[in-house]
Length: 381
Image 1 (tube, helix red, strand yellow):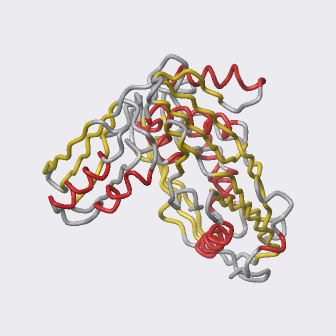
Image 2 (cartoon, helix red, strand yellow):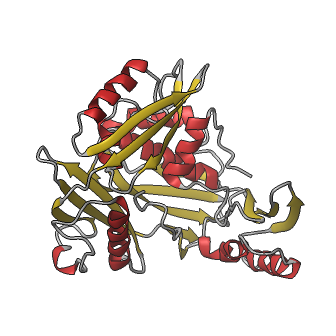
Image 3 (tube, helix red, strand yellow):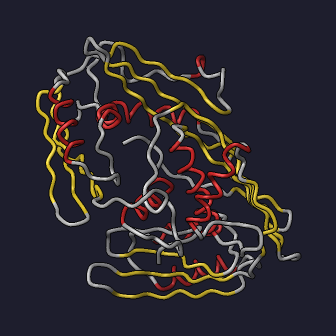
């Protein structure tokens, strides 16, 4: 059911699924409700979400055999999907509806990673560790495509770069070949995020779970997390925890703060408790990146927060959603990055970086399709 990437530990698995929203195929959907729906692909199934829209429509719904069969026939109406079947399995807490689809296998003849020559050595090192990413001579599969995207994302994050990763996929079922070209669209700079195992040396003790649920809406989590030495999926250090505790106690805008650690052996669970005094917003700025570089000011819609308001994460999320909707249009993907900086005088500066870049494209025997997934997974927490 999960991608056929070799997940070597919990941190690596969560990195893949949380950073990229990786699914097991172009139409995968999963829920904690009664019915979970999956696509299990074999061979080089075209990664075209529209072909699998009926699969997503079945998720979280009551199972109906007629609709499931009609969905399968819709998928099979595309000649590049040569075989398929649908099956229902019952488990204790949910039912699982699985679509198994098969296409001819295509050989990858070219992969353009879209990165600078200075990054080639490092990205090839990461690709070799991953093992499941695309490379010339391999069979084109959606999971390999996703693995390559993951590796590029990890490289960028480790360099403090926040970006959109676009791709163009060319599938030729007559010649049985596939080419993939990635393009990096730079967003606002961020902070360097350390690589996690298996891309970094394994820790003797790992921060396996980082819990931020006991935090009020007024607390600037992203600002605090950036300052902390203790990192999710990083190596556990009692000294780092103590240093972080002293740092939190020194933040005058916090009314309460605590870090608790549980677990034994090779894993620790870290929980952070925060309660903040209201922090007045001093400045709000919106910047455009990618296709919006230098042309965003006159097109920013009225914002629901203003200088003088108290900062809150929920209000910032709402602004990010408004900005994403305002700049989203056909043929374009949009990501919104929210940065909050607490000044020495206890005020908050907010910056929203709006990155727009072209939709992914999939060419099947020379015919162009939209290969982008439409969701809100990249909105800030």
